[in-house]
Every structure is written in structure tokens, then in C-alpha cells.
Amino acid sequence: ATGPPSSSSSSYSSQGVSARAIRHQPWSNWAQTQTCTPRLTYYPSSLAQLQEIFRIANSNNEPVKLFGSGHSPNDCACTTGHMVSLDRMSSLLHVHRQEKTVVVEAGIRLRQLNEILPRYHLALSNLGSIAEQSIAGAIATGTHGTGQRYGILATCIVALKLLSPDGTVWDCSPENNQDVFLAALCSMGSLGIIFEVTIQCETVYRLHAVEEPLPLELVLKHLPSLIESSDHFRFWWFPHTEMALGWSANRTQMRSQPVQPSTTKQLLASAERHSLEALLYVSKKAPSMVPWINRAWQHFKFNKRREVVDWSHKVFTFDCLFKQRVNEWSIPVENTVPALKDLKFFIEHEQLNVHFPVEVRFVKGDDIFLSPCYGRDSCYIGVIMYRPYGGQVDYRRYFAGYERIMARHGGRPHWAKAFGWRRSELSEAYPKWEQFQAVLRRLDPHRRMSNSFLERVLYQPISEEPPRPDLSLVAKL
Image (cartoon, rainbow, N blue to C red):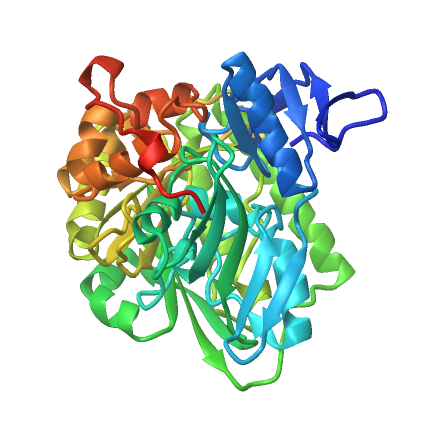
């Protein structure tokens, strides 16, 4: 992601409100799989400046998109119009100790929350594999961790404030504007700009995590009991092997026993990382090396039991190595075993040389309109193809077959990933699709938040849209 504007940026103002902007600043996501050059890039620091940005965009009939850390591999943040960062709207506003809730500006990064919350004896109940995302981006795309009693991160949001493109502020919660609330909690930035959220936290806690190699057959045979036996369970399967790496974590009163590698071990880990990237790079010319690489890394790197006790946010997250292509879908949890068996058969039958790992996580169902976990406890299965030294890699055949398998097992794609489904397939997968569309038409009838991603996956063709409501009748807050 790009940094804040310099003194050479332009200034657009109205009624004393200044919205600083940079002209034609190139942007790319973290994996460098998506790029765009917006006409203007803004770094606002107040609600008034956000409203001014919409006024400018509306007067020019141009689109507006938010961007955060850029960790989504798809083009959900891209635009040629007005691009907005909330990096300057990232403050902690209020702490309600008794309720264990915090009110924050939506540009705050998860890693910042992880640093701030322990000062108030609080912590987030769950996290994904990384903590670089803004809270706005994390909830907009359905970011999740693992744990069959824990939903996607958006389920921890108990209230939010959203600015719709017409300048209206919507104060939303389960008790107030409930339909907008349930739509906004996973809306891919389509309804406007979420600029403030209230997060339900819990008392700060440590996790005791155990990581151990297990035969894949054993994991699949005992999967229900493995899921139930811990607060958070996930596993990684190494394609081209019969082995998996199980990971379970439970809240504990034990003292912290963090992993503190020596200088020698740190140097060795760095050498391993560079060796893996170099081998994967060579394997682009000799793909038959990939099964050997997978087997070697599983055998030498992930061959023994490891334990750690530490504060929760230090246990949940880990290094995702280097740039990559990823795809991930949610399926009903009861379909986990047959889906993985189908994926394994597909890889072997088609003689595909695919990178490790296949990651498998478990998430509680919810009632958020476009959550991939809507109405069902879910399993997320994620696949990966690394891009050593940022180069290209052959992934399309693997991902296409994977998507067919996920779809056959009731799948819904992760909104932040690059997937092949379009609106016609997605609308059939979500029982609350029409309810979301009704909120979308009400809050952004002129598609000010549009971009190529939303055109593919969300918007109805103009000719198919029902008549737009009389917005003068909509109550403004």
C-alpha cells in the first residue's frame, strides 16, 4: 500500500473542509497481482473530509473505493476514480471496561489493536493468520480465523457507523437499522464507507498451542472430535504426501512460554526460507521437483511436536512467507472430509504439481447477509501457489478444479480471494441475497462505490433492476 501524501499533493475544499489528495498515484496490492492508477488518492482524517470526498465524486459522477493493507489478491479495492485510505482515521475512541467493548476508527490495523487492547486487559476473541489488515477491510471481506465456537471477525462487531455516498451517516447495530447492519458487516465496500466500529472483546488471555504431524487419514477419521476438543483447531495437509500438521490452541492460565529462537536458529530459519524460495523458483522449469519439495519440507521442517504458551495475538498469527496466489472457499462443515478426499484425488489423477500446504479451518455460522458462513457452521479450505521472487506461476488448472470441487460441496468463495464465480452463481448461494440487494439500492442507488470487482460479483444489470425507491422517503439519521 502507498503512504500518506506529501506536501506536493493537491487540495480540494468546500466550506472550510480540506480533503488532501494525490493525483494519479499508482497502487498495487501486497502480492502485486492487482494494480490501478486512480485519478485521486485521499488520506482523510475526519468524517467531514470523507463527506467532502463523496461530494467531489458525486459532482463528477466518478466512483470511490477504499483501500487498506492490500492483502486481498483480487481487485476489490481497484478503481480509476477516487481511492481512499483510512490510515489517518485509526484511533481508539472509547473503552467500555464493564461491557468489554472498544470503539475505534475503522482504519485501525489489527496489529495496532493487538498492541493497544492489553493495556486495558482486553483482547480480540479470534484472529486470522495475519494482523496487517485494517478493521474496515477485515470485516468488509469476511476475514476469519479458526475455532468452531467463533465466527468470522465481523461477528465481534456490535455497532458501526457508515457513511453512504449521499453523505448520510447510518448508525447501525442489531437494534438500530438492523438490515443495514447485517448487510454492512460483509459488504465488500459496496454500501459506502464504514468509519467507526464497536468491537466486542474479552478479557486478555494466553493460548496454549500444540502443533504436531499427523497422518492425514487419522485426521479425517477423527475430525469431529479434533474440532470439538479445543477452542481453536486447524490443520495443514501437504499435497503429494499422506501427512498433515495439526494445530490446536486453548485458553490457559499457564505462564507464557514463548518461542525465543537463538541467533543460530534465526539464521537457520532465514536460510530455510531462502532455500525454499530458490527451490520453488527452479521448480518452475522442472515442475516434477514440487512433490519432492513438499515431502522434504514436511519431513525436515514439520516432523515433530511443538508447544507454545503466549498471549493470544502472538499465537494466532504467523509468517505467510513470500508472495503467492491463493484461493479459499467455505463449505458446510459436514462436507469437509469428502471435499478433501475429492481434492486429493483430483491432484493425483491430474498429476498436478501443487505447492504445500492446503489449509483447513473451522468457523461458526452467523446471520450476516453475505457472510460465507451464513446459516451454517463452516469449514474453510484454502489452496496456495507461491510466486518465488514475485514471478508468475502456473495455477489456473489447479484452482479451476479446486473451485469445481468446492462448488459441488456447497461452497461459497471467500470474498477477499480471487475466484471465478460471478453474480449468477453467487446469488444462488446466499439465502439473503435479495435482502442485501435491497439495502444496496437504498444506500448507493447510483453505484458510486462501483468497480470492476463489484460489477462482476454483485450488481444486477441495469435493465434487470426494479424501480428505485423515492429516497426522499428514507429516514436520514
